[in-house]
Length: 585
Image (cartoon, rainbow, N blue to C red; front, top):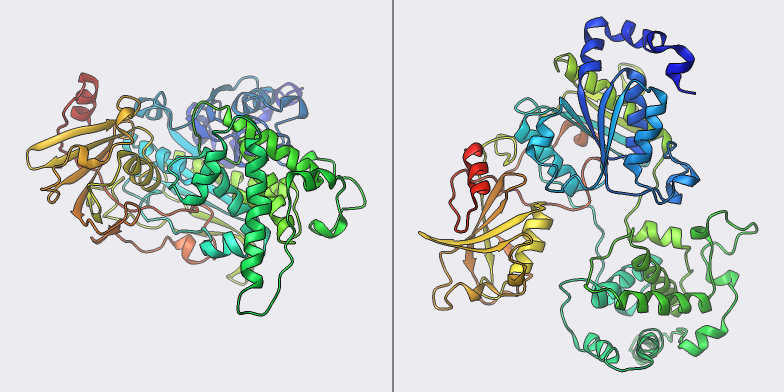
């Protein structure tokens, strides 16, 4: 039964009307709300919105329900596994209040179909996303559409809610996000791993070497790739080379070193692996538990099973028509990562981990806590109501694992005034639009520009790249239309005898955003060793982040700040692109 059926439509919102007032409640019922994300926060948020009186809601999510979601994303059941999260969540909250209109979108928020006109149709946008790129994209379109946005995030017991109103508060891109990734020395990863994190890092690198993108060639990789040209036994030869021959070579080097310490690594050929059919207590993290885990992903498997998983996953990945980036939600990529991580751990006598644990390490996953999601979702709704009322009393809400002492009270939720706008922001203000970079311009490829600057640094889902020098401007890449140029170096268009004075224009028509790289050519640099030489916009740290050790909204990678260039013409412009540019200017 729905709440509406049990209580009646009038009685269902009696309490809400008394709390916010008749006038505000009427605005709530008329407001068009977009919810981005139907995961841990999204489920709680949708339920809270419907129970608070919101009746016109749309939700976007690109994921499907996984069995690991069922312990905290309460709108999902076992029968929903593999179904779109947005669709299942919309159906579930629809049953709470049949009078509400809930529309689900199974797709990526960065898809071209969700353009500026789409975001402009809403009164408020509420984010429950889990990555920086998607958050930045939604923020940019919300600022362009001048639609209020409420950003949020949780990290274990901590969480934060940040209301964003153009020209009144900082937007998500007002400050560069701090890097949070841990780096390791290459020699540690390849020669002397001591923890499972080292093994997982190696496994992800192993995947990228064979099945990822933009991998530098080296003699060892060339040898392994050579095995793939043979008709039979290629996968077995690669297994033996990685887990037996290479380990024997490392052991010989370590035992012959001046340290005087001998090591006893475990060499593992395919034949040896097939003989180890039982899980040894000494070889796994914490020993084998007395009672069998309920989930398959929490079970330890034998070396023989790991070798079999390696062979099957590797063979299946070879059948894919094109290379794909590593993704924790890619079953084959994760299966190969688990096998390589545990087999390498066995080599170096490091306790093996369960697939669930390795996925958490590989994806930099911090376990989500249902109560944190619930508290943050409630705070999102409160800030959304404040914005609907006029936005006079909005606050940044921070959830703490340990209480903060405020006015002689222990507070787990700390409200603070929103940080002020960064006047140099390239998204919500007319700040600087240029960054200066020193790089090997002639050898840099179009693919490197797309992956490094457009996708990683600027989060541009539909990039277009042009080269400019004076009145000379050349369009060299446009998303999905000029992919044949990806592998070409820039010297294809730039004269080798005149590499100085060129600029690189990066534009995304979906976000209506343009950046300019002013390049100084340095032939002594490798392609990957570019250097930023100009000043980047900086601003004070957000108040909420300054008073806490962790800022859940900040993501695990950092980006260089560039800004929109308002007046640029491009060769190959289409009428649609010109129309968008005219409207933008």
